[in-house]
Length: 173
Ligand code: K1U
Ligand code: ZN
Image 1 (tube, rainbow, N blue to C red):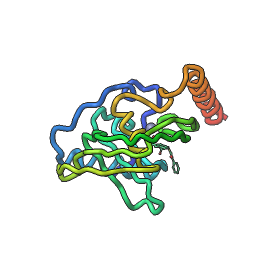
Image 2: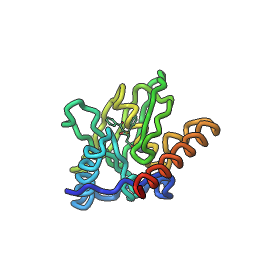
Image 3: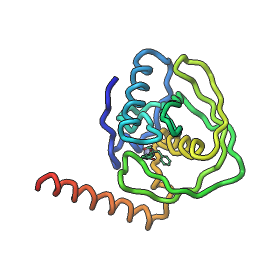
């Protein structure tokens, strides 16, 4: 297994609509394992394939306390959304240091393929539902700050730029 570099916003791969996975083979299983390891190391609760430079429809998620419930969703589709919505703070490993409020459905049903190529369906609520929606947005080329007003989006980009400049300066010192 390997820790992969996480692509940083605004890399164009983060704005791509990702392609469906035609066959779940050993290459896909290896990438899923590497994505899981990369997510745990970051640390994060989710990671989408475009965040490691692969514009394909696969995400890994683990919202468990003990970090022992890794979910791999291949070609996931949200088939049902509950009526209720909630607004909560989100972050993203591709936009480190940025946390902003986003409104999402509190419960969803998702169909996907597992690592054996078998069709599965789960009903998700709470953080799992939020995280799935955040990761599935990545597969459409959407990052969480795309949900913000123009003003808040611009502020987030400016904060990111400032943070990166500071990091560069710190490295040079
Ligand atoms: O897509 C990503 O970059 C992963 C992202 C997922 C996410 C976080 C919060 C709300 C919705 C979706 C992250 O994992 S950001 C890091 C994070 O949440 C975290 C960091 C340290 C400990 C626990 C969580
Ligand atoms: Zn993200």
